[in-house]
Image 1 (cartoon, rainbow, N blue to C red):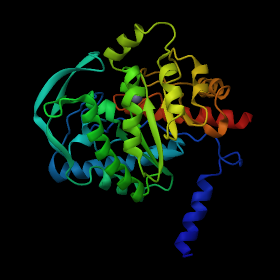
Image 2 (image 1 turned 45 degrees about the vertical axis):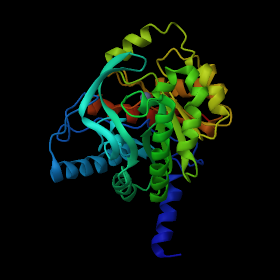
Image 3 (image 1 turned 120 degrees about the horizontal axis):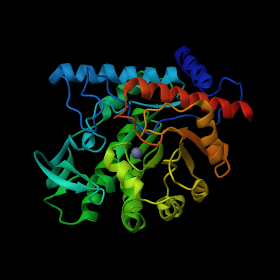
Image 4 (image 1 turned 90 degrees about the horizontal axis):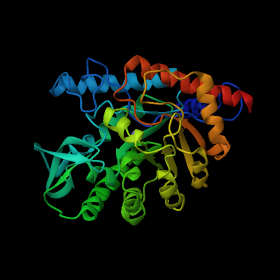
Length: 362
Ligand code: ZN
């Protein structure tokens, strides 16, 4: 072993031993996105305009990525992400380097079962990866953190729900075509050294029958032969008004997960990331994910109010009644892209502080 190899191994070991000296359980992570700095893009928006173009934009994305990693490390997040600094939106970022998509003539369409309208690109021909989509971003992130690295991709069902179809004429066929491209990308990301590849599937909370019919089959196609851990993130959406209004109509108990978790428990996906704190999800539904790693949302992304460490700890402990601690990963409810940057950073610190409280009580 080289000297550098030994150093790497020691640092990896240090990363795996938490402050209390116990072997690490309750490793913290985030759903994926973080707010972009104001010098990179418009703030507080889901589809923000970039502040620069060409090489200046590329450089700004790289700087923001390194900063996002550093801020997560300083906040005490164990499994970090690139904060999705290089993509305008969590779905359309993956689509930008594919052939067969028209980004110029956007189509206004209702998405998430017409919950809200969005200007979406359209599939106009056979889908193909022009080359690596996120490889350079993943390599940059990998080079700048020694912590385990998560990388997010949109899930096939959520992609086909966020794009117009002018070619396939069949939602499932188009989803499977995207799943094949996601699989090529995921294999590449795993080879770069990404530890967890997560597919974001908020659409799984909308089209409950389709999850079992073909949603999980599409995910299986996307993870086929992928060497890293795989995850799926299923939430009730970013904290935008359309989602807040939708949630208000879901009743006192949100039981969507009850329909999908048994199928996910039987799937080959390793981890499930879900919304928990401040939601109306009955916590016992987490017990339906036996055998899976469960990324428990202990930070609300729909409010600027920063959770106290006690509130985070209480959310984790409620979940621990249904998920064994070695399978429980304290996480955010969803991405934090539209939040105020300082609020998001304070929430990351609260997540780590609350987790430390629980670790200390064990
Ligand atoms: Zn989400």
